[in-house]
Amino acid sequence: MTLSETAPTMQETVPDDGPGENPGPAEALADLLAGNRRFAAGRPRYGHHIGEAAARSSTQEPYAVVVGCIDSRVPLEAVFDQNFGSICVVRSGGHVLDRSVIGSVEFAVTELHASLILVLGHERCGAVAATVEAVRTGSRPDGFLGYLVEEIAPAVTEVGADDPQAVPKALRRHVERTAAQLRSVGRLAAPVAEGKVQVVGAVYDLDTGVVSLI
Image 1 (cartoon, rainbow, N blue to C red):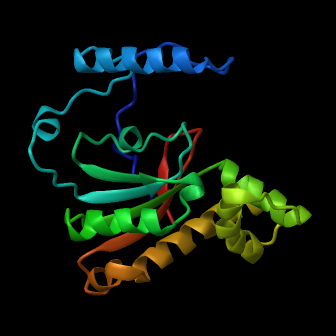
Image 2 (tube, rainbow, N blue to C red):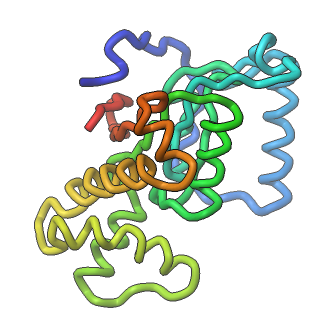
């Protein structure tokens, strides 16, 4: 099952932002602010327009919360073609859950009344690939980066780090594990058990743009 069967084909040509040398901090800030001016003036380069009703409303009423990875190639509002105010987005490396992420999801469900939680992994996830390598070699990074590896490692262990398809298999298993945890944790458990909230897992294909439920 996919979520993009009825998605329109993009016709607009946009500037090529291919790989290159990253700008310094001053240039990066100037680029962000220039982009915001285009956006605010109603002349966005990449097709994101201000949704007047949602952006200018005094309240927000999102119907879903999407938990995704920080990967810059997976902008979640764009992937699902959603207007301002339609979805809450929570992102972390490898969509790893911690207290902040879970608390944010709880807020979206209990206070903003979102009825769907979608956990979105993506193909060629760097966090999953790094975890597969760490488990395979027994050499895991320290510090906070190590926390991401520790949280993804159980999925890698379950599928086997030496499997030639370890990365895509571990990705899907990690999505499943994340969704299962959200179904039973904290203030989410009751509305999920009562059928008021559904938690689903999915994977985004970087090559095709298709989101597939798992």
